Image 1 (cartoon, rainbow, N blue to C red):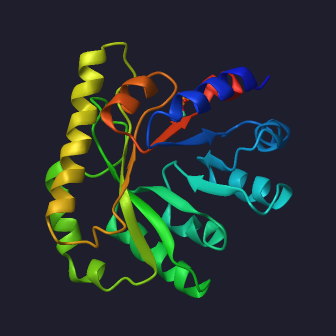
Image 2: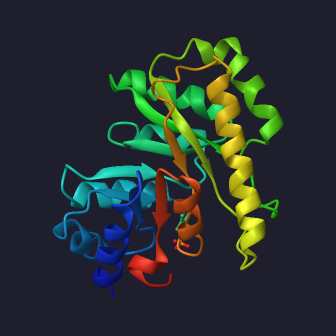
Length: 221
Ligand SMILES: *Cc1c(COP(=O)(O)O)cnc(C)c1O
């Protein structure tokens, strides 16, 4: 069952912040998505390419689909025609493929670079050290059909608030370092995607611009 009451509370909470909500609908049916769509929501996040393609074909055209899961290069072509933003860019190989498929579709695809901030080593993403080198590569500079809009990170799944704050601070430092580096166009570099069901309140206070919330809205998976 979708939690429309919680949705309305979060939307009200967001009025005090410069932040948008990505409603994470992975593994949930299109009927649930339509429930939030009818309440006025347009930004939905998905983790799996096949599932996203399937849902996109069944749902209204004006949904902004954000891809937030780990993305394999060989699957970019399926979402390139319609995806609004890819949060999970974690390699040059992937970004090159996104650029190539965006060009074929005559689009510019908005991307975030995923930064590894959690303790767990299962989560994908660049380390803080790797990032500036990434933007210095000639291959990166040549890409014209992607727009790097910001950074994304996932905190450790823990109740330790201090640890989560520390990890989010790492993400913000990376964001500032990139913004100050002159390696990218800072005019478009405005997004900080962090905060999920368990830690979004901390994320809001720390300046997240995109919180990604699944289970609070759609129920547990
Ligand atoms: C599943 C997922 C979310 C949402 O998680 P909840 O804890 O259900 O809010 C957010 N971001 C990413 C990258 C995810 O994979």
